Image 1 (cartoon, rainbow, N blue to C red):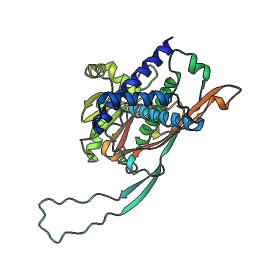
Image 2: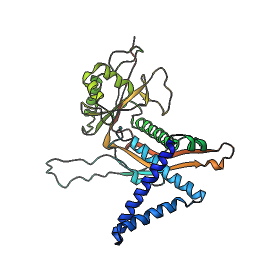
Image 3: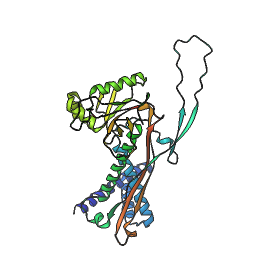
Image 4: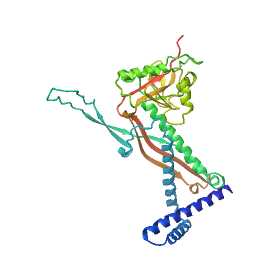
Length: 355
């Protein structure tokens, strides 16, 4: 009954839309509005009885559903640490993006009186980056589910696929933004707070100040510094920092707070670091005894993100006479990386309390 009611409402809305479009067309061509509305409604009703060839109908489904999933995972990534990062999607060709690697920055002279000026040469190099492939395993939707359930099963499936794609992209992005290891230009600091029940030292505000000091010495510009806190470090601050508690209580998406010049964000699956070597573990690695998630710093203008092609794989139930099930999966191309390798990034990782 609910499904019938939903279809009736959809049909009425479609007729209203047809009528509005007909009025617009009528006003343009100079005929009475009622004639345009009636004509467009008649066309809409007539088209509902036209049966497209199976291949064409499937193509329409795939195109519409693919667009809906792309819109969903794009919306899901709004209000995250990827906000404001330069988007190079327009430069992607065949799911490959080419970046110019310019060695060094030009020297700025102030109140110079010596001429002629020395000539500097900035050597360009081309970096070719292939976009990462994110794909979902196929989900089955039977014809019985499509026609018997009171809710739109296909809409639910598309939503879940979009959610998982966005989660995978965010996880891969924060891992890529994190430094590989502690170096002079990519600082990896350790926490210094009290130990919790597992022996892990907690994050405290002084640790964030220490990171700020490191970045100041590296001459990283202050406007655009972003710190993405892992779940452990979020909890550490919530336990002992009343000001942060208040800021987090009022937070929904986007920036949680501004702290010592950093825009504070959070991420669910931050990269793992070995707390003894301060080296990053590979993407998807399973934590061992010395591994903890790290909070990740990056300088926003030096990062980039890029979306590529998207494809839906759809097998209709009529092609599966034994199981009578539709199969649906999606593939999307995306990448987010520093524009220059190992530049303007850092991390804070928890360590164990020593005996």
